[in-house]
Image (tube, rainbow, N blue to C red; front, side, top):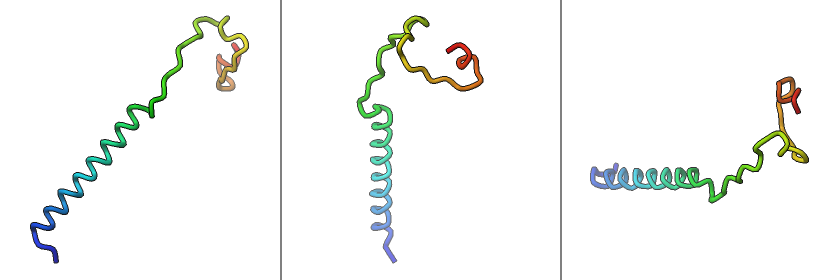
Length: 65
């Protein structure tokens, strides 16, 4: 059986590794791997000409487009 000092050191290392993994995961999630959101180029219905539009069938979007 491990003594108290080794167990305490193991707990600290384990908690440190958990914190590091969670920090790395949250950093990657929040930065979205450096991708940028494209600028909005659609300001009216006329701007949709020639573009592909996804709509849900049976909704007003389906009827309008």
